[in-house]
Length: 196
Image 1: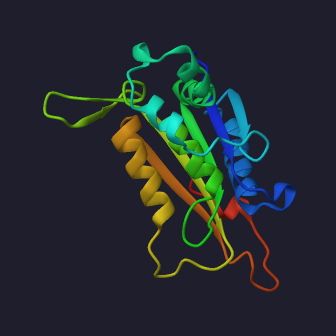
Image 2 (image 1 turned 60 degrees about the horizontal axis):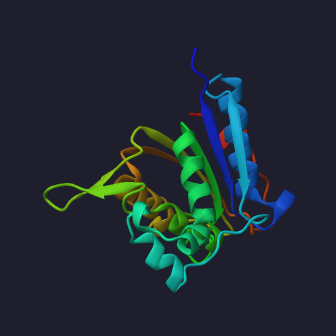
């Protein structure tokens, strides 16, 4: 039986107080219990933060990997590690707090390190993007201090669009813990992921 690997991305700086980390960890525990994964790679972006884009990185990202010089290859060391993590994972479990309707800055920086022409996607003869890493499954764990109610879900929409455009055909499941800043808030992670 083939072993399945999960990549667990943590992007909240709140450590043990983080609801997104609590939710994503509950997802991991459930997948292990259901024997859907055998191996977990954990990447805490608050411990090893992705670099933000600068001119050198952008130049390197838009060059074919074979055309990179030695200095450019060094600049892309972190990005190469991100790509390898995603390549080797069958399932991604991504936790993020919601900040001003968006994902954490660390998670956005991690995504910016992942997307690379000639590495995660190519262009077909019609100029359409084709991802190289098809068939991944993503579980999103989003925590917000307020309740989303009728507001648009920019985080899930953003991640779905990025992965399906630049990484490959991806199935995305979203779980949320909302209202964490409200008085008397208590969380039941098992109830939130009961349909997992």
